[in-house]
Amino acid sequence: MTRALFLALAAASLAPGVPAWAALLTGVAFGVALAPPWAAQVKRASTWLLQGSVVGLGAAMNLEGVLAVGARGLGQTLVSIIATLLAGLGLSRVLGVERLSALLISVGTAICGGSAIAAVAPAVGAKSHQVSVSLAVVFLFNALALVVCPPIGRALGLSGPDFGLWSALAIHDTSSVVGAAMQFGSGALEVATTVKLARALWVVPLTVVAARVVRPGEAGRAGPRPWFIGGFVAVAALVTWVPGLTEVGEGVASLARRVLVLTLFLVGSGVTRAALREVGWRPLVLGAVLWALVGVSSLAVVVLGRVP
Image (cartoon, rainbow, N blue to C red; front, top):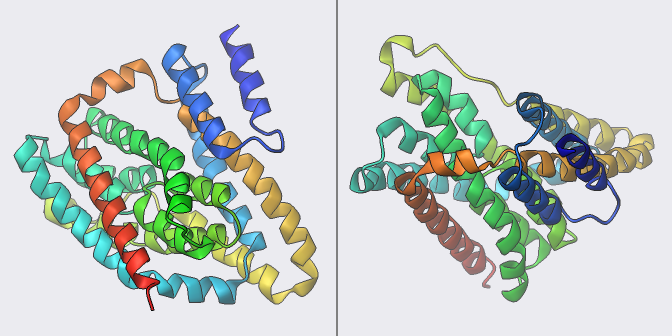
């Protein structure tokens, strides 16, 4: 019965018109209420589907415009990453959060959520419970941001590009950034995807630096590389410079958006009661404070930046 319901909900998330936030919240409700089936397989599938969806979204992008938009958020991205890491490590001492858990939560908040945690964790020798706690904390606030950021953007009268920039700076995980931008409307998705992918590139040098600082004797050990960023750029370049592929590219990107909604349901189903119990209050407070600091400060940057 549980498996049949899971498959039915997953299939329903692919239906046209199902919003990203609804799929995510349905997944979370399922994971908390029931024991999700095929947990390991679903986790692997959601990772590949997310990355594949990001590559597919590149089929609707003009690479020249993408590079111009990415340059716009470069300075804000670098400042945001450094400030978030420093704030996270400082707050962890006040709250008494263990060092590696705090580092992973800070990295996930600063760069690209679960992808950054997955890359940095093996490089610094993090244990399984530290990784689980960090992923749970970061994901909880990803889910919250996906729901609350679009209404805030509309209430403040942000344009599509402004909201895209804010979501890329303020929301941790690529899936949640894209999901929020999809809800907001025209102009948001292109900016959000571009700036977020540019932000995600920082996981590579950060992984090397973290390994050298935490484990100087094993600095060469690196985690997964964000291959999907290269795939996104390659697909966008192909569609940009081969005009005959424009219509095909739109179809590929449309399919990628539906697959992304399914992915959000799968990701949400991984939030279980056991994961919530494991988090505890100290890492949760750390994640909440960092999430609020990044969200408010990046919103201020975007709003002030649009003032003549």
